[in-house]
Image 1 (spheres, rainbow over the protein chains, first blue to last red):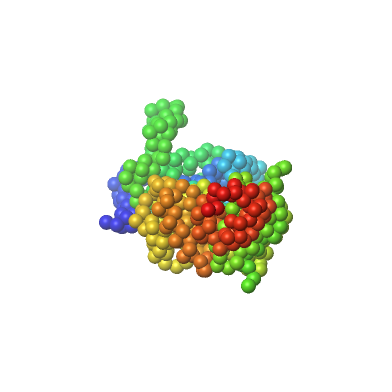
Image 2 (image 1 turned 90 degrees about the horizontal axis):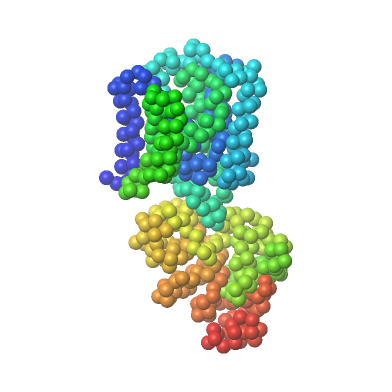
Length: 314
Length: 239
């Protein structure tokens, strides 16, 4: 098999396995998996910015929350139906990422982390401040009757799983196409050596801004889907924790790999799930896992595999 | 004939250091022009001004009659000014193919694979396409750097000490390659190896303390007393 055939077999194979999983898994785990797939979309977006382009943001919770509230408020305030609301969430994430990017990309490295964190905190506080509209820190539950696409009831298990899978598959294949495209090569060049890339005729600011907007679209879509599928829109999703989580997923699964964010989200989700069944101090277990990761596989699961011979992994 | 590129009275001071202090240069289309001078003469800063890596404090730069003095570096590349780095600056963790592909796609050319292959075989690296650039020998990395410069299909190619670290046999190959670029590409060559300069250059500009000491053919420069005093040390390098 050529590398290209292997890549397609792997990624389409993953989607097929996830499709089959709903018939095998008990409902509890199927719902978990739907959640993980949506969070993976978020992590894939984070990976586009961080893993491929080298933009270490601490503000992605803002774009996730923008998607979630963009969707939720379109349902409740504007009276839109679920599908346009979902798209509104996607657009909100991308637009906000663009606006933040125009300002934050004047900085780099640690300053970029701090500036993005600052914007995200401002966003979080704004959600609390405008509590009459956003529901404050309690958030709100969009009514079940609003969570319908046509006659498809998104609060029911099977449609929810299928919609999560459909969005996941779309995001995965788009990401695969992106990173294998000429633009994907430029993204990596920007990560590896910005000054050299400039001397090859690429405008670093423009490339990084485009990347951040793409990343924001992913985060926005994920936030919108999360709110729509699981029926809750809340300000907790705008907290720093939701900026850190996608980073952890990406680091665990392998930064700069297409499937890594999914693997990372899967592993982290079940690590927390299992650990919290054993002890209240489940973050201790998560911490230990991350220390082990840094010690033994600093490039994450797939990063380690790629280094050990599976070089064709995109 | 109007020169392709003109730099007039460029200044760049770093604090009290006058790295470039009123230097001018004109490049005729198709020529190989060498820029020489003792260490610290301001050569790299000067080409930094030309390529846009270093902002100009005063003076004017034109490419084919167009003022490009304040264009950012990436736009100058698009206009046809390519710069290859003094310190090898390939992407070590990308493949040789990807390194050249980045340059090819920047120049907006169709047929990516074919073009990459062409440029790699031009510098003799066709067999190394799938290797990581960082695993190449130093000399091969220099050649890869050159391939990236060529793949930009520049009108002016600025080579900053391209033969540094090359073996004698590789230098011969390099000279043949640069000779083959004229007259399509104009070359500005910063070089310490006087044999290479004297063999390749049609004209030479000598820089000293950020100023132009002399301009002329290799013959003129060899016989120029001021140049001999400042740089060539009288007898050792000129013969």
